[in-house]
Image 1: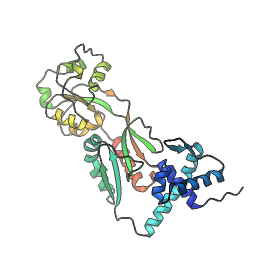
Image 2 (image 1 turned 180 degrees about the horizontal axis):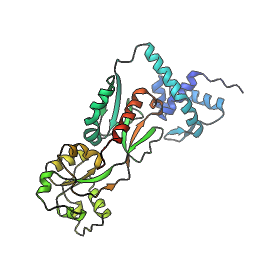
Image 3 (image 1 turned 90 degrees about the vertical axis):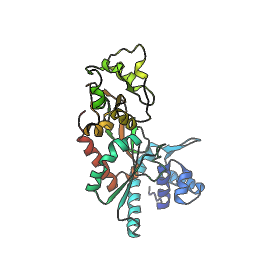
Image 4 (image 1 turned 60 degrees about the vertical axis):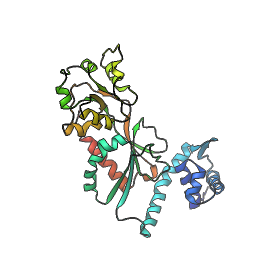
Length: 300
């Protein structure tokens, strides 16, 4: 049976798949939601299958819809890029907008961006570490670096690394207290806390240290690791932070690790982008550079 579908219908399908919303797709295409609904109905009727599962609040791709989207998103992106090239709309320098959490941006990413700029002088990176985090699905963002479980529906996801928690303190602070030879020695010292005051409690428990007085949850708390590292460098106490955040401070001698007793974490960092953007040259270049930088990280 010969199936004939217009580019308008297929383009409408791609936009609805991108936004998981007929309303948002209509805004993107400059048409009414009714027109979008009609085009989706045409595609589903011609193909003889449901492409979206719908509920009162949202819609998402079925297995057949996902298969069709995988085949269409790159060709449509290539068409768009070709039109932009023809109209000379692209700037001389490609912009790459990256959103991530403030701690990752300030403690790890930003100090290394100079390397990327030297390798790719034509790619201009813009880092967005605003809180709350930018929604990659609906904002003009190319890449999100997220700390979580890796469950980002509808996105192209690559695992970057799984951090571990390490104990750090300034050389001056460590010289002023009794030697730390085992995890239990830390319990008698000032402890800098994470926002929820759970990391030290978990760390002591994992290393078999009893804490009958609840000392592990006491001390000044901080909203993110970058602030806690600054406090540790200022000799305010011991900090328990993700190793990836402590690398620069350790390299510069601002802090050191007094006890070899790290703790693995359950969440990882992920490189997340829209499927239709995953093969873009600037995004591929940035992902490959990140993976290469992570591969040469010191083993703390």
